[in-house]
Amino acid sequence: MSARLEIHCVPPMISSIDKIEEEALQGLGQMTDKAALEQWRIAWLGSKGRLKSLMADMKTCPPEDRPAYGQRMNALKKSLEAAFKAHRADDVAPAGPPLDVTEPGLPAGLGRQHILSRTIEEIIDVFSRMGFTVAEGPEVENEWYNFEALNMPEAHPAREPSDNFFLEGGGMLRTQTSTVQIRVMENSPPPLRIISPGRVYRPDTHDATHYSMFHQVEGLCVDRGVTLVDLKATLFHFARTFFGPKADLRMRPSFFPFTEPSAEVDMRMPVRGKMQWVELGGCGMVDPNVFKAVGYDPEEWTGFAFGLGIERIAMRKYGIPDIRWLFENDARFLRQF
Image (cartoon, rainbow, N blue to C red; front, side):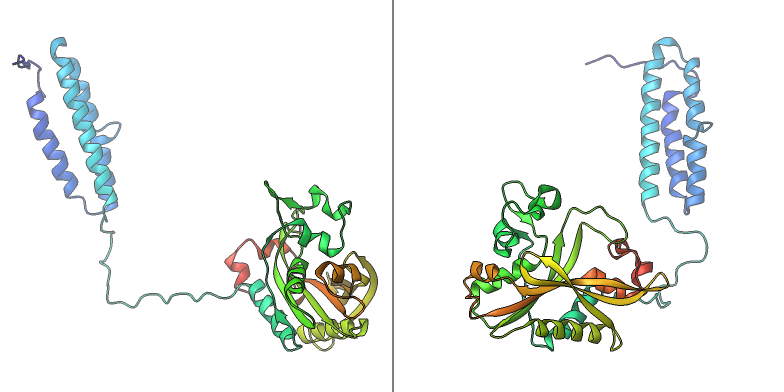
């Protein structure tokens, strides 16, 4: 049996530390609010507290007793710190009157649809009344659907790595929802009339009018005898239904690899206090090479296609000057719509 350590330390004796610990813990148990709890901490654990003064008494111990005294004081310190931490974590009763649990609570705030989700539904509603159905497709695509079937050969500048999000091991994030049109035509015989809303991705620098992820709605109509007049009538009817009957629109010549002829659709609207022509999207008659890629006979079938930026439509309709606001999820902004 090991020899018992004899204590010869002058007061406070090691044997009295147990009583000091009991006193401290008893006082801690009586703390009923945060202010009182903080006062206890200062009194016992603070830089000028009782624990500090007790540690200073070590110098009155004989040298042979100081290790035992120091070990007991360290144990006391750890005990009080742990008890304080546990007590602070408990529900300390707040100062002031008790909580009246019978008082009615605050009503829960109702959520609302995001402005982009609502815009997509409004767009779908207009086109569905013109006989278009909604088609969806994957956001991770391959180059056949995103480029080649849309008449963009390997050397086309739109296929540059700097303009796309290519994935390791193959595949890419789609840059347009025209990929859905190809998938639908591969699996459905004409005639058909679809729109394909969804997210697309391009490595654009974020500013007031550009974002690396945004939404498009692409449209496709394939039938016998479809002409550019049908395309113009469809888009003008959509714009005047969506923005109002006084919407002033125009079509101007443009170029896209998957349509021929091609055009841009602009609408005249106020921008920073001045009326200006603002682009809504591109359109055109489906290029025969696209029909050949999906097995349609371009001698029998004709069709038109269009693509509209959903953020751009929402921003024009609701007067939003910065596309980034749509993705910051600031409730103060979103509650306005």
